Image (cartoon, rainbow over all chains, first blue to last red; front, side):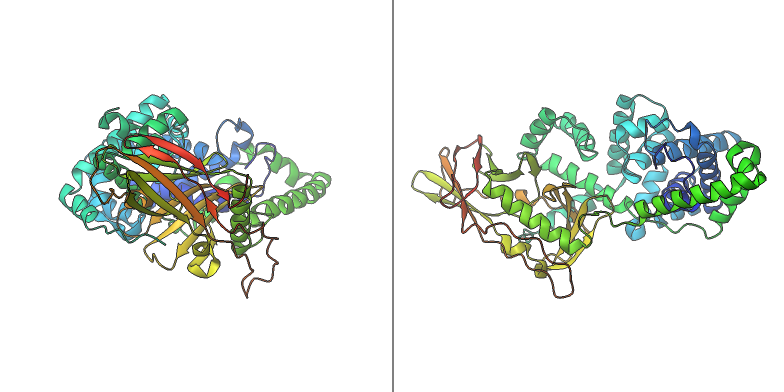
Amino acid sequence: MQSEHPHVAFDLFYAENAMPAFRFALRLSGNRDDAEDLAAQALAKAYRRWSQYKGDSTAQTWLFAIILNEWRMLCRKRPVTEARLDAIQHLASTMKFEDLDLATAIQSLPDSLREAFLLVKGEGLTHAEAARVAKVPVGTMYFRVHSAVRKLRNSLSAESDLQALEEVTCNHEM
Amino acid sequence: MKCNEIQKLIAIDLSGELKPGQRSLMQDHLSECAACREWLAFHRSLENHMNEPVSVPIGMETRVAQMLASSPAQVPWLTRVLGNQTMKKLALSTSTVAVLAAGAFFLLPRNAAASTPLESFNKMRSAFTSAAQKGLLRVMAISGKDGRVRTVTILDGKELSQFPVKLNVKREGELNVVNLTVDMVELQPERFRFIRFGKAVNTLELGPKSSPNSFYSVTLDPKTKAPQKWDVIVVEGFPIDVNQLKEQAPKSGSKSGDVQIRVEGVPLDVRPGKRDKVAAPKPAKDPKAMSGYVRLRFGESATTTIRPKGGK
């Protein structure tokens, strides 16, 4: 997407951005209805305001910023006080192997760390891009991602992780 | 640097934001620290779990379109176009051009100069050999203080840390001889169960038949198709550092010594597949052998240029 083509067809815009937008929204909210609301609103806002695109970040970075902002507003109106089983299952459904343990651990992260983790590790943004989305300094984003990964490592069974590593054999030669 | 500092750098490196100097320090530490290698493996496992597409609700597109249509004041160009016949005709013609242009942009293969993954793959192999003949293929050997050796392949300044290199360490007198084989036969198309474009632009994914649970993710230079990055993606379990597995201590004990590294290559054989009707690019002159050596003491690192036999 480039700012010099503000009238690019809607269907092409949607094809490019709908899946990452919905996935990020689903992982944030843990609820398909909320995720669809968030993603649809963000996609519509992004397309409407395309003329405001300043070209200093990728289109998806901008889109994630809208989704994150809408989610935070929703949380202020409807605070979530505990992780729900269905939220964990929805989160697991967005991952390979649908790892419930990992989904539970991610869902249990503090909001700021979870958002950082989902942006960098989930959606593949750089720390600098994620910092722009979350409106924090990049050093803060480095810290949040590192802290999130450390908490996940501690939450998940350390024994099973290490055991899996010990079972690796040197058979990777071609 | 301490492990805590290194582990902070790992996430930054995985997102491509680490400075070269810090990266070198990190890699030196990783070569000797199993705990940090486990940390790196955990990071990659997380990314592997999270990198999964999801199905978008069927009605969402219609819903977004309805949202746009319900707020015409915020889309002045749409209102102007639909309300004016002359502008409508003009907009339809120009928007048609824009749609066609945008469609061509989005629908063209990721690599316009190579229309199929196999073609990109063959160009990659040819570019690799060509670079080697120009003296741009180097192997850096890094010896731990215990004599264990790992290698890093560097092609025209780009580090291919997971490029498959066969490594064998043995002792010859007072020399620790490390034999490395850059075996291009293993990179023939028939050695893979799949060759496909990756999700990112200018990437190939290669699934070796010998490793059903993993595949290579190769980033290519968009113009030359030379590999710029070479990673191993494990479908199940934790990623395996190929170079880590190659570390072998010398058979006879020695607390100090020199390491001589020889690298031998196998001539390329670039041929189009039976189902690929696109002619393969003209292959570079096959090197009969690619060799080089470096003398290395324990705890040191050195780099050698791999050249064809009889080369400069």
